[in-house]
Length: 163
Image 1: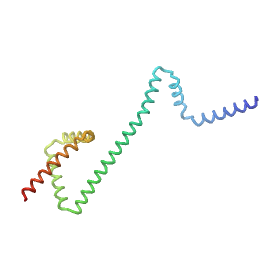
Image 2 (image 1 turned 120 degrees about the vertical axis):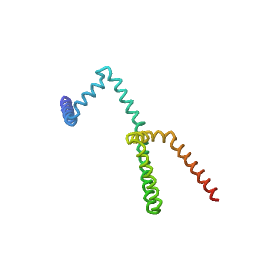
Image 3 (image 1 turned 180 degrees about the horizontal axis):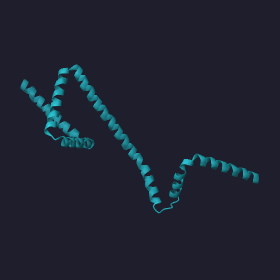
Image 4 (image 1 turned 180 degrees about the vertical axis):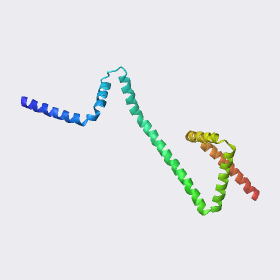
């Protein structure tokens, strides 16, 4: 029986040495983790609870991260769609494209002339940072809907005058 115990002890020692060799770079981390798990300091239990809570909250954060990535992809698709429509307009209706570009660039140049560059940059950055919240609360949809109704009213009035 002593021979079996000796063999078991030797096997245990060999496995322990093998594991120590594999975890050689993690020694300091394991010693710190051991101190934390044995609560060598009074603040370790709340720290453990905080970390565990944070890990369980990450699923919610992961879901939000997924939503953010999805929104970024949708925004990229919209921009690419507008870009393609612009080039389609350029190919199919070059005069309309030319007029649209001239009016757009003239409007941007006029705004740039009227407003100080730093203030204009401030307004653009502020708008871009507020844009997700404006979209989330439906403010953009509300004002776009109002603009569409007004444009439709103007078009109907124009049609009545032409008749």
